[in-house]
Amino acid sequence: MPSSRSLPAETDKAILSTYLSLPQGDKVTACYIWIDGTHENLRCKSRTLDSEPKSPEDLPIWNYDGSSTYQAEGSNSDVYLHPVALYPDPFTGGKNKLVLCETYKYNKKPTESNKRRACAEVMTQAKDFEPWFGIEQEYSLLDVDGRPFGWPKNGFPGPQGPYYCAVGTDKVYGRDIMEAHYRACLYAGIKIAGTNAEVMPAQWEFQIGPCEGISAGDELWMSRYILHRVAEDFGVVVSFDPKPVPGDWNGAGAHTNFSTKAMRTPGKGLQAIEDAIEKMGKVHANHIRNYDPKGGQDNQRRLTGRHETSSIHDFSAGVANRGCSIRIPRQVAEDGHGYLEDRRPASNCDPYSVTEIIVRTTCLDQTVE
Image (cartoon, rainbow, N blue to C red; front, side, top):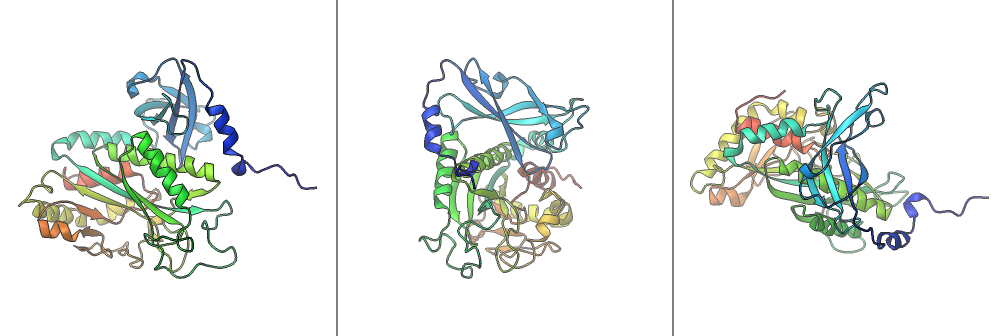
């Protein structure tokens, strides 16, 4: 006889709230979060502290079994967690913290998935350029069976058109998850600028920024962690696959808005934007290799020249053109200053890699393979 017990994804969250409402004395919990060896997935574990940390420097370096996260051999498995950013914990509340960490090997060198270290060095070199970023993170919601959330199990919803920024039960799937994530990010102090339903049903977007330098990557990775945790509570899966459904459906990107102090300067900004675009065009292939974790293979399924994308093989730029590699917003062209939008990064990109190569190319005139 089948068991009547619920699956883990169906546990009663009201029961958990009973325990989370209990006082925890003078102790504080810190949830350490890091990027694993897939360069896409996040891991976490928590520890108890005797007092509330005010900065990452107040937290101890910790370690974990890297052989279980695709980051080390079993015979030499210790990988070290170095806290780099601190956020209020929206899941346990109080003085508890979420802690974003860099990962280091036994020899004190960054792990292969630690792209933050190099990115931080570049942002320090380019500090006088005052690089700002805004990243538009698209994602898809899936049932545990891998089917897009809310889609018919034996068919497909109607063609794209009525779903973007939509309202209504027959057009929107998973708004509860979006709203919960939005509020949790605000609680955590994440610089989340907004959110909306996307073109494919069960696809959503939130925007991070504007953030300066290294903080863009920090904020995006932490907001991704929060999204995964929120989705756990609803028993839904979050996918950052750049093309989650083959066929006539939009893919998912992480459009990256970028500006420097020169680009934001009235009277001179548009020329600075055009100069940056010219530099980016010369190293298009290098950027593509850094815009998804698989060196462009994931993005190849998305950047087809259809569904509001440019071809992965060609570089293009234009005003208000969503079919270009780089879009200059019409208002920016009219004002003569502002920012550019790089539409090539995939939804599963590492924002440290993306922001680093953009700054290397446009500010430091450095080539990255």
